[in-house]
Length: 190
Ligand code: AMP
Picture 1 (cartoon, rainbow, N blue to C red):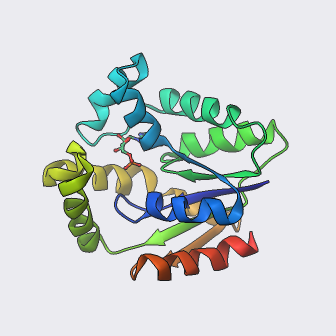
Picture 2: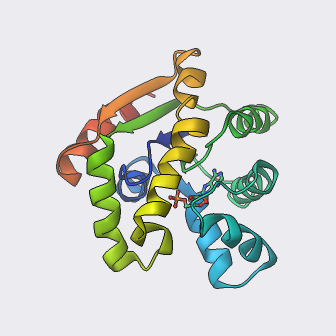
């Protein structure tokens, strides 16, 4: 299996790029944000809970997120591998993911990170908010809080994967196609 964590701050282009790359490598794309939004739309118990955090730009608690992610992986028993988008976002999530994959004789082949300067990210998110219908993309205060969550809880995961020789940074500034090509060069080696 090829299991890749597509990493980067909010607005880096993870979702867009995962959709373009999943077909090329025959991988299942799991976006935890999309799964939460699906649950919110369908007013499930999980959705009602997740909404209280997401509306503020806060992270959803680890236990809830980890259980959900594991259930999503288990829905795809025949998968050739996964692109994890928006997960892990904390050290506990990363450790849980390693442990979970290990029980299946699998591992993360690499964390591939889209590197984009923060001022460009805010611009991209506000632009996306005009059409995405996402409340957390339209309010600059919420966007700032999402960056704060990223900087204080998520960014450290670079070190977690780098310590295993598993971190691959990619320049996330350029056209969508240019960035897909840069990512594919790394995916090919994993
Ligand atoms: P995203 O679509 O990845 O930007 O995620 C949108 C929101 O969903 C985040 O701001 C969090 O509130 C929540 N979320 C998504 N993935 C996670 C995760 N791995 N851990 C905690 N919260 C998450």
